[in-house]
Image (cartoon, rainbow, N blue to C red; front, side):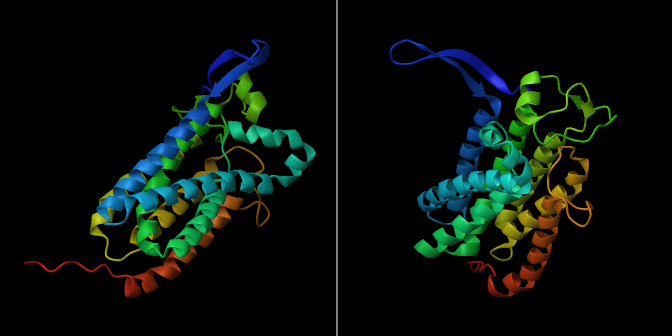
Length: 275
């Protein structure tokens, strides 16, 4: 864990000290995740024969909506805490949010953009999905550096022990306790999903297949990984049996299963005839 890359003195235009400026590792990795997502989406758009410039513009808005949605759902899930500690809302910019809030926010903006510019919706979703998942993979490394989204106490050989007092003050990271590196688990899962989606893209049988594969695989991974998470106040359903993210994962998997036969029937990829 290394929440701060550097801290340097800061001055105004008159040379007066205005306190230290801190460059947070989470923010840097979030920016890298943003750029990597744009790059992958643009490359996938070109391979799919879509207007890469239009897709890149769309991806910018989708990623911004995703970032805001992730923060918003975190506030909603932990509403009691933030109403009691309103100043802590500003700490959201130093750590992560709830991914599903980002996913839902991004979907809403993508739906609007597709309707506005009359784009082929499922084809666009297929080229955006790998960009989203690489953003997740890198973003979770940011969570690890910030100390947020930590795991349950564990005795596994690869357990991590956080010691940075700054992270404990900022996001409540437990110190001096071996924990499951849940952030790294999710990052690894996201990278594996990314490789599978890129492999699947030229082999897909219908438009929307990449999107459904992403939703299903990530939701299944997230459902399981939630049992290893140790950070509190992630929402509680059915007397604490499920977290908010697990409930959303179930809904998304069921939704993907319901969409699958329809997309197979209506969105079949037309292969060019062999010479």
